[in-house]
Image (cartoon, rainbow, N blue to C red; front, side, top):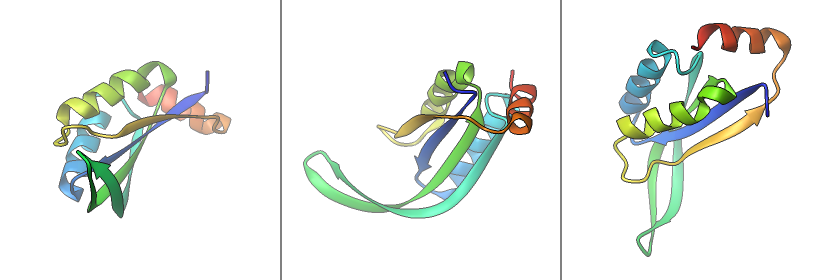
Length: 104
């Protein structure tokens, strides 16, 4: 198991990314969310190739809270199928201590 988890998600627009990010920090499911800004996504959906602008966000949390955080993001998300990925990371000791102190 990693020391912390990064939860990566894309959102329909900046407002949704910020609203959900704020709610996850307030709920102490994440110590921090980095709103990474717009990106262009090209994907296959229901048999067609689609493209669209999305907003990326990266949430810092503990491995124990990662699945709960991902589920909470999905519940608040506007997409039928939000893509939410959990990435294990090994940060420095100071970051590890901060993430553990700021989450429940």
